[in-house]
Length: 388
Image (cartoon, rainbow, N blue to C red; front, side, top):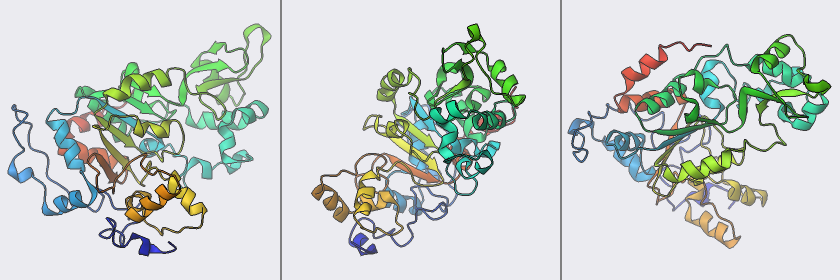
């Protein structure tokens, strides 16, 4: 169990040599190493009519499907054929990086790696409610940098809007607080900010609501916004969910309403490390396809493997989903009463629905637009400058 021989004689044989959890090397069902594919043929009036021959899978794509399961082409084909009608998008900070907003956890460039100037006890303290009550100045300085008004939507945001324009978007769930989905033109009822945002603000003491402009004027004047209601003087912050606070009350009922209807879940730009949002990948029906567009593999139910690693077991550099597909690992998990079946199952021999498109979110959605013959529509949206 101490070396990569664990992976021999299993479904991982074909890929173990090249598998890696790094951005550039992890295998995927439609990875960045896959040759550019031709556009999906125009959708026929008869939905049952197959795509034209020149748009069929290449031999390499067929081999990848045999090894990894369905591909990005399969997802797009189902959309083009009208078999997917209720798409849910679950996004994280990765879809806003090209707008100039850093993500949280990328080593070197992520937000948590660049907070030294705030002299925090831990990087996460900037979003900690208790720390905010003791020392609100660092968050106010960060809010000044992140406040909506200077960032434009990315191609990924415009693609979500395009899904809405095509009539297949059920809802966009975002972990981001930047509000770029709204600037991209999505209706308010099509967006749910799981961790809140800047669109409303409240006093954390008396809960009196304050306008966005009230908070904005204060932080841009390098002041801490405080409640002026009846001399309350409590701290006022945007309705961003901090550590120590509950998610917005509408989260649970909306999830229960939406996710049973979902026939395609698109996860983009997130490490899926924060619960309960990370667990949403398991809330869609078993018949729904699930697509991850991300620089790194995420959401593969690796908690069970972490338990084995804590016992001293070494699985090398192979992606967790590849390790979980190994029969010997499955036997070990069963022996310890653990399960690795939650999350994406990219390399499972029984995978019929999970697709990993490795790379930048913008590149991934542009590839989807090409396959769907939506490229011109996407370019039109990208050319539209959002009104701040």
